[in-house]
Length: 323
Image 1: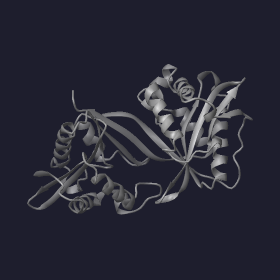
Image 2: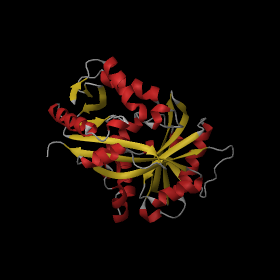
Image 3: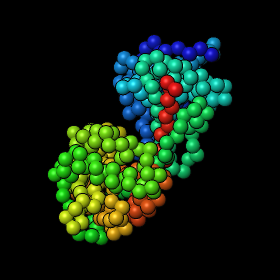
Image 4: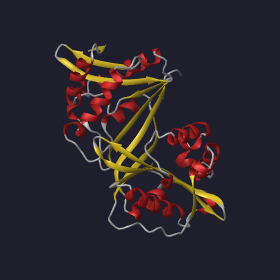
């Protein structure tokens, strides 16, 4: 088996297309799932960037597999569902060979950590590449569950008439502290969210909030970003967004929902969600999407009670390259 960097986009595209043929989403379009045309366009944009890695495995009979890695800021990120290896070659060490060579090249190009995201239908067994990552020393970070709701014609009635203020009336530092208090205070919260730097690390959390305020996640008018008040003090918050993409209908996204421990089980979180659903419906969103750790049973129960249904499982993997 030979492992070589792709010489051109056309070569890689042909190799990648032939190797992705056994992947369920590549063969047929699925609702809100990966889209072949969208992924191809994004991959082409990635191919044109300098430090990225695009490997092709082959032998005398042809292409055996491909692997794409985006290298940026000291981190390498595997492309979705890669290494791409056809069924008949998965037991012959092709995926292992591609990943080992990819890790070597990523380290040479300045990456100190390699990450991968694996998302698949909630009723599907873990795909083979997840087991491949683990066999090569990748650590699986808390798996998540993604849920979706189709908004009905009727409104969603919040159980509480909450007093709220727009998130923008608070500084980034104040919102960061509220996020940390909602997600990383109790031992139970830390067990669920402790590995998610977006809600447990103050530096990362503030960067995320700044990115969201600058529109990096999607449009987010004031009525989608609120702080709930109890006795005039912050008790919880919600940050929702509206996404517009070429390959799926306009939809809403609940980015973060948090309630301080002492105010839980009073209907605050449910009221914030209902209020957000109404606001997104008024802005012509037919669907709303949300994700949460699989171990966050209270949140999953809340969303399912509103009418959300599980659609995807998602796992995050990482491996340190310089240890």
